[in-house]
Image (cartoon, one colour):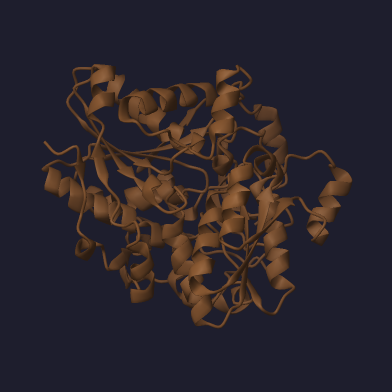
Length: 447
């Protein structure tokens, strides 16, 4: 039995899979925040290049990956599929556990799968500079890497709590040539307004998105890049699941359960969506999306039209949301602190195809430590959520023979400050109060 399955360079997928045409009952269109009517590409062209907008609204099931994008992806792709035999033995389970190791990328996570594509399409249309937000710093690092490959400038608005918690993420972004500021910042109207009202705010992805969008909208040379949630990001991430399908076939196995952590939804969707056609054809397969109990958009949110940011500048997206002005506590899984969920993931939850699961911070770190001791890789705090869910699945019935596949979305070698706090007993579980969520969702737009 092979411990890991590695595809050759020439076996890398040459097309992305677009799930949108295959979603039962489809997706609700994004709405113009001013008119509340379906939004076309013309208005969105102010902040996104047309190449990405075409993908965002495409009904083609497969879209070719450009050669310049493939050339850069081949630095680390295809990524390994690994059988977690030592974890299985430690748990005493008869379940087989596989993980897709996205931590082998240059920045240690799945994020460059979309960042490289986004930088390419912007470069192709003459864009000189990209503005973006980042939570834990994974997306900011990925876009910094990608823009350096295509000669673009990059400005990153990093959520304040992560800016303070993760100094080496900033160093990584600077190494690739990016500029980074803590969000909320004094560099935008949105940032200044929020700092006046809440000078001690930990920030949020919703605030950082508002700042990055304002930056892009007020400069001729700049477009905006988003690291999750949108359809074209899920499209680019589908390369994970497409590779995994080939690797599972080589292993002579097939997943009964597919698991991923969910913030905006891109890494889970990237692994899961290529398997959805099999499910629709009658294959028995479960999809489990894991989120933090402190930011539970799928398990406690509402499926509704909402803004993607605090300043209410994004299109209205039909998604599971906790309300656009929801500011979650400063948990250490910074990449999972987002108020909404990708419309694609939201639609699959609506159709009862994805099972949402919420877990607490401490049990996730405990799972991450066990994974590190058994499999030798320290998971990022976000990835610990997927590890925890895989352990839950494998130990429900230790004698049940089933195959579990989860996305190891990133390593935690730049997140050791979070582990320090875990070992010092400074982390605690936090379940967001229902009354606070209700208060936040009272401000949902009336459609």
